[in-house]
Length: 190
Image (cartoon, rainbow, N blue to C red; front, side, top):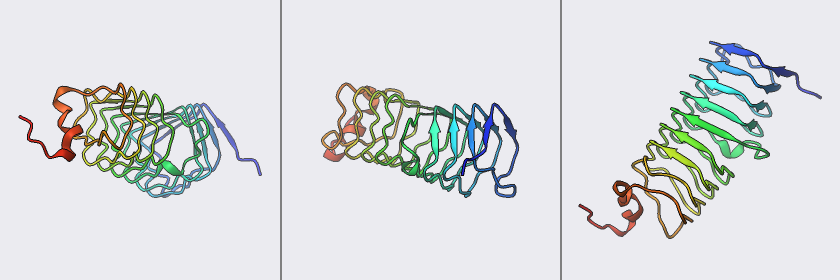
């Protein structure tokens, strides 16, 4: 059964916990100040869409396609991106709350995170090659067997990355952030 195709529409102020979203393929759509909290968005497709000031906390996104999607000022606490459709997955985040989110095993090369909260976020086995973490709070974010080559953490903070368990060749870090790379050695850095 084919899903409806929705093209170049704007959705503003819709509470999808009350008014269910139409399952479909959304292309070049904009969602502003919409509430998706805890709803099931599985098997939808979003292509070149923008979400501004939306709440996705604890939503289900199993097999959801997110192709060239930009999230701006969105609350996405506990969202499991690892369940998304990985085919042509391309994301950008600006000023988002991604605490407790999971990007487990995803290929997120060249992904931009700008001014985001990523507290306790799961990046285990994620390919973040050439990703940009611009002024992000990565407190208790988990990096294990993560590909971080050429990633830029130079303006981010609170990260703890084990350099022996992750690939970090040519990644950028600030001098102030070096303690986050040496934390496991329990050194006193002044």
